[in-house]
Image (cartoon, rainbow, N blue to C red):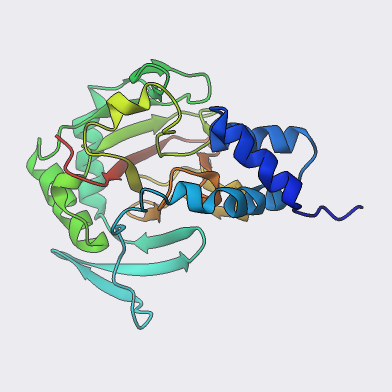
Length: 277
């Protein structure tokens, strides 16, 4: 197997492609189609576009739990939460017991009657649409819509040190057997024409928290293909990850593996750079 090298010519080609209007994601996909390995493609993009990506400066701060000293448990507003796993790159933390069983059941009950086929953001227009990549049912709560939502939102804010007002409302999803969400990124591609309209409300997404509201019999893991990580859905647990840039170099490509047996219920909280109104 030949060794792939990041040459000056390759870096110049990447810069030329982005200057011509192609997004970093599109350049990344083109490199993979041309036979470049995932690792080399990401490294080349980082080297070629690092200065360009940061020319306006990265977010001043990111949501981040206080895990100095490697604690096994931390206090989050009104509840003690376990720290089960953490990674630095990508920044992923798995929390145990973020929600009680009763809170999980109540959130499912509140959401059940409002479920509809899940949609994804359409960055070409700034709207949303049904997408074959996402075969779940879902609904959104307004921020603070219900006392339970407000309590969970305050707990999340304390857990990751991020203002309540910088969060979107909770989204609850149900995945039936066979349902899945193919790997994707949660940030909005700034090169897409619809992103400008989306980013007017709170700026870019910088973090995600996926809370598991039940434990399926089989399947339904949250996967991070770039780092070969799978997080099993366990009732009350929550997976947190953050991303400083809207770029594949964050290695936050993730998906929801197909549910094999039973149902999977999750609540997702997306965190924005600024106030989300």
